[in-house]
Length: 358
Ligand code: ATP
Image (cartoon, rainbow, N blue to C red; front, top):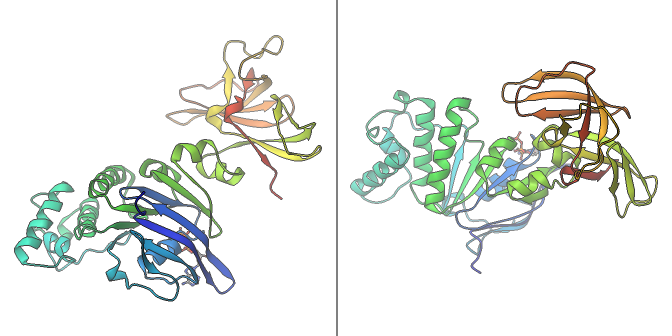
C-alpha cells in the first residue's frame, strides 16, 4: 500500500507543566477528511499548528507522502510543506480584488494565475466576482474566496481550524458542504479541528476524539457515536442517561434486568449508559398489567415526570419505580401528563456498560 498522505507519529508538546499534545498518532490517506474533535484546551489546535510548522513538537515525527517533514530537530519551514490552511479569521487582503486574493499564493505568469483563480472562483460558485473587492462580498462569499485561495496552489494537505464557526447557522451548512466538495475533488488530505460534534459527524471520514492532549478514540462517525470508548466519549456527542449498577456473578443488575459484565468483580459499580433517542416507550400497554416480555429485554415500569416539545422532537423525563430518572427523546409531538405510567425498554445493543470513573 502507498504511504499515507499525512502521518503524525507520536507527537508530543509540553508548555511548562501542561502537556498540550500527548503522543498523538494519526494517518490520513489522500482525499480523507479527519476531524480532531474535543473540548476547548484539549490540544486540537496545537496538533494542527505542529503539522502546519508554526509550532514545534518536543518529540515525534510528521511525514507527508512518506517523506520526513519534521522530527523535533529538523523541520521544513511552513511554506515548503505544501500544506494549505484555512482558519476562522481567514482575513482576505482588503486592497486586492477577489481574483488577486485567490491568485496570491500562485507562481508563474499573470495570465496563468488569473485563469486558475477564475477556474476556482467558478468551482466555489463565485464566477463573475473576480473583479470585486472583498468588502463588497457577504461573509459567506468571503469565506468561499478564502477557500479558493487556500486550494489554489493544489496543497497535498489542507488544515482547517474551525473555519466555519464565524458564519451564522443558515450560511454555515451551505459553505461547509461546498468546501468539502471542493476539497474532496482536489484529493487533498484534510485535517480539521472542531469542538462541534455535529460538524465533525457531517464532515469527516474519521473522527479523532481528544481529551487532555491525547486521542482517546478514533473511528468513523457511526462507530465512534455508537461504540464510545467511555462515558465521557458517549456524552460528548449527546445527552446521556446513566444508571448505576452493581455487579453480581458477572452480571450487572439494572432496572431493565441483568446485563453481561464479564471481567468485573462482584460489588463493582458500573454505569449503564443509554442515549435518550434509544430508550423505547411501550405505547401499547400504558404501563399496566404484568411486566411485558420483549425481545429487547426486560421492561421497567416508569411514570412521566415532565414532557417538553422542542420542535423536531419531544423530551420526556421518566421516573423508574427503582428511582432512576431517565429522559427519552421521541421524534414527534408526545406530551403525556405528569404521573402517566408507561413501560420503558432499554435495547441492549444501545446500552453501554462502563466502569464508574474514579
Ligand atoms: P480551543 O478549542 O479552545 O482552541 P484546543 O483544543 O485547540 O482548544 P490548544 O489551543 O491546542 O487547545 O491548547 C491546548 C492547551 O495548551 C491549552 O491549555 C492551552 O492553554 C495550552 N497552550 C497552547 N498554546 C500555548 C502556548 N503557546 N503557551 C502556553 N500554553 C499553550
